[in-house]
Amino acid sequence: MSNRTFAIIKPDAVKAGNTGKIYDRILSAGFNILSAKLIKMTIDQAKGFYAVHAERPFYGELTEFMSSGQSMVLALEKENAVLAWRDTIGATNPDEAAEGTIRKDFATSIGENAVHGSDSDENAKIEIGFFFTESELIANH
Ligand code: IDP
Ligand code: MG
Image (tube, rainbow, N blue to C red; front, side, top):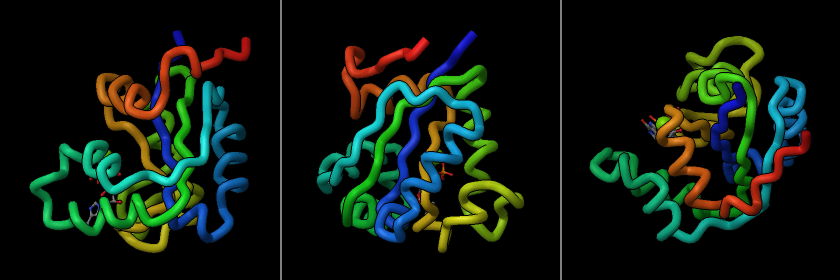
């Protein structure tokens, strides 16, 4: 049974020229990429996407950062996709991220941490829907 998750290659990673390397990690980890696009989030999109964090002290910093430049949004498919992707990216804080994870290798701080990953199947569905229409999601098998 294949599941979906939602990923973002965040502005810090795109700006640093790591988009291709991270895209390759996604493929190497066995995910099918159902859709991917390079965008520049508006501040309103960033605020909406991270609305769950609206009361957190870092919300302003986070939404400014996420709308500061290009990012790549991706819809991914794999068995147990949500957990598999969280394992691939590592802990939020790169100092706590395991060896070999994307955040360990590419994140520079807890805020500018290279990638996003959904935290549940329910949120994956909402987050994919935030950036993609169903017809944009292509199962290549
Ligand atoms: P996650 O991305 O690992 O799921 P969340 O706790 O959901 O982590 O936080 C969402 C995003 O908010 C993080 O990826 C990071 O970019 C940012 N963030 C989280 N905690 C902090 C913080 O303490 N300072 C600054 N930014 C933070
Ligand atoms: Mg989260």
